[in-house]
Length: 126
Image (cartoon, rainbow, N blue to C red):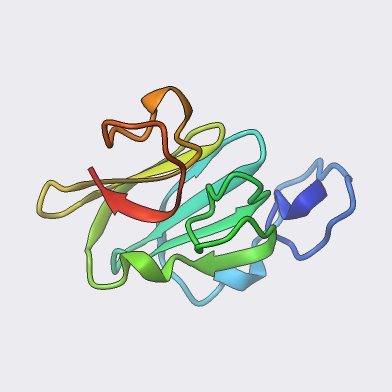
């Protein structure tokens, strides 16, 4: 659970051997989740995307490299109905209802699909 990876609000590295509800998402209807080694994404029924964990490469999509101990809504995707998400090792991806693909995080090796190797700290349409 170090760096907030489990979304329970703590930074300490500790294992959680039993499933534990993420209270910060209690009022949300989560329809999908995707977890990477150091961060996670959740998609809600209304198309919002939430992220938490280690943010060192901008992969949380909040415009910075800050860790998030609790799930935080990715405001840059507001107004775009997201229907699917995927958490890569140091990046994130979202598909919107209109068929758009958005990516953010570490851009090395061209992994974000923007034709360059630039990192994006907020979602950018491919």
